[in-house]
Structure formats: C-alpha cells, structure tokens
Image 1: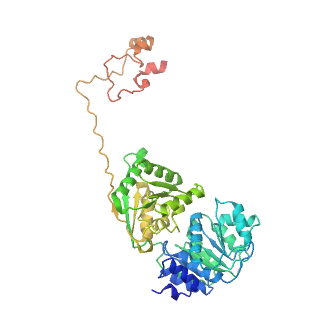
Image 2: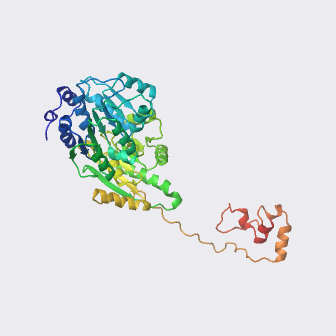
Image 3: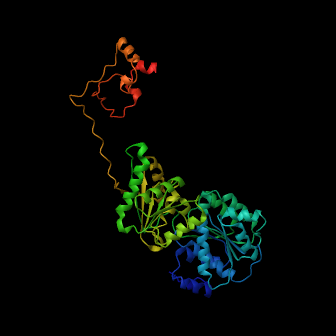
Length: 455
C-alpha cells in the first residue's frame, strides 16, 4: 500500500494528516484522492467506515488553498443527509486544514439563521450543509451558488432514503456546469445511478468493496425471539435485549442500539436506565444541542449505550464502538449494513447482534440475501417460562350452582334487597366459593339471566 506522501497532497495538508496520526491511506482514499486532485469528477462506492470523508476533504483543502472567497458566494459545497454527519465533516476540515487559511460555514437545522447568515456574509471557502437548510438560505436571498468550484454529495444513498433526491437535483441546477463533482455512496440504487449519469462528467469510478457488504472484522449473530403472548411482545423483547447485553459481559465496552421507530428509541432507553444501564436516546425529534451533548458523551465514553434511530446509522465516525445491537430488524436490508458498520471500524474487531421476531423473518431473509451469507443463530439467553399447570378442582369443592332456577326462586331473588344478596346479585352462603374466579369476580357474572334483565 502507498503512503499519503505518494498521493500528491500539499505539504501543509500532509503535515496535518501526519499530526492526526495517519500514515497509510485506505483503499477509497488511495483511489479517489489522485483523480480529485487532477480536477476530475469522482464516483466513490465503498462501505461505511472506510474513510470516505478524508477522500474528499483532503483534495478539496489542497485545491481551495489557492483563491479567495467572496461574500455570500461559497467556493465549495458539501451536502450531507444529517446534522450529525455535517458536523463531523466540519470537524474533519478543522483537523486537516489547520495549517491552511480556509473559512467554513455549517448550515444545519436547530441553529440560528442569524448566526449562519453572518458567516455567509463574510464569505466562506467551504460550505457544509444539509439540503433543506441550504435551500432555506437560498430562498431567503442570503446565498448564491454560482461560485461553486467543487461540489460533494456524501452518503447519497441515505439522501435517497430520506427523500432528498428532488432537493439534490435542484441544488445541482443552481451550481455552475463547470464545477467538479465528488459523489460518494455505500450502495448504488437505480435512482442514484440515474443522478450520477445526469450530473457527473466522465467520473473516475472507485469501488473498493462489493456493494452492501459487511466488514469481515464484524462478528454477526441473530437471536430468534418469540413472545409468550402477543400483549407481552415489547416487554419480553426488552428483556431479551438486556440479557444479550449482559451475556457479552466486559467485552461490551460501549454499544449503539438501533430501533426502527423514534417512539421505541425513547422507550428502550428509558427501560435500560430503569434497569441500571447507562443509556441515552438520540433521534431526529430531539433538540440539536441535546443530540450534540449525547453524541459527545458517547464519544468520550462517559456514556456507555446510545439508543438510536437511523439518524445515527450512517457516517458518524465513532471509531471504538465494541458492539451494535439491532433491537429491530431493519425494514430496508441496506440499513443493516450501515448500522453494523458503526462497529469494527478501522480494522478493529466488532460484534453485531440482532433480535428477530416471527414478523421480522421476511426482512431477515432479505438481509441475508443482500450480504450473501446466513447470519449465525444465537440461543435466546432468556429461557421461555414454563406453561402454567391446569388448576385441579378439589374433591370437596362446592358444587357449581345449577343454571336452571325455579320461577319462584327468581321472583324471590328479585324481591330481596341488595344487602340481603351479600353485595352480589344472587343468594350465596357466606362460605360458598366460585371456582376459578378468585376474590375479584365481577358482580354481573354472579347474577342470573333474570336478574341481569331486571337490572
């Protein structure tokens, strides 16, 4: 493998890379950086966790070091599907451009428009944004995209999943035809292929791994789970999750737990905390400052368990996640690859465990077809409770009252007051028991048909 010194990067960028502790480029970096430095369009296809971010930040810094930004006219644009990924890209620019004088702005939701406008008015070399917030600024007349020299689309397949493709197409139309485009995705759906054919010009295609494959450093497993009763599915499933975590013991230093629905993210996080696990939730409905605090706590290991929706499934660079637990089987098989890609990063070992209910077996089959391998089954650590034994009636139990009653008895029963009926609707001896109903039998059950009709 070549070194970063062989890729054609500028001395100042190489110095920053060395200070960050990197020596050898990853395959996607080795393939994408040279053509990007030459000014070619690049189409990069690689699984998550392979270093795609540095593949475009390093050549961009080298090329933007020459030139000057103008007010409201950024020189380059990086589009990201989520706030967290955009913030991470901004951190990468800070790391690698520390010896180069470049300005940047981060346009994401949850942050004041006024603060972002002030940065844009000064002029920025690098604009990092989510599509929605970028178009908000453009429509308010605060931003011009006619000066874009380099445009990057990161995690394009996630953009497709989130419904951003129309916005992406519109943003492309607002940028100059002469721009350089760097386009990165983990998978190539037909819609993504269409966009690349439309907006990229003779791109250098770098595909470093088979599409939608999981890293070989990740040990995978699935627990086949069936609830004892339908109304206990959620409760018993959370118990299985806790047992699976506990079974990993000290090997599980930290973990991300993925749920399909935001409401389940909150419920699972609350349940884990109730049972003594240090866990917090993160999903798209939370305030941005809260999401940032939670991610920072997980990164510095003061938080052990991060319960997340798919907002955290892609692009977040948290290198030392030991485990990923899929509380739900993802409905889109590609999401499984992205979720488990949060562990086993940068050559480290990782483990991913999924809980599969009978209703999820179709989605599990689709995942196994996508990754072209069967996921090993793991024994459910929660043993099923034995079925309750049938209650045996004692020989001396009181005989069941006869259904038929004489008309005189019914008439007599209706004529008695409630106090004479012992609180029920039917005359019973003080020691008489109703077999199988316990002490809390509803009153209407003890009443005869005639008494119910009269009441």
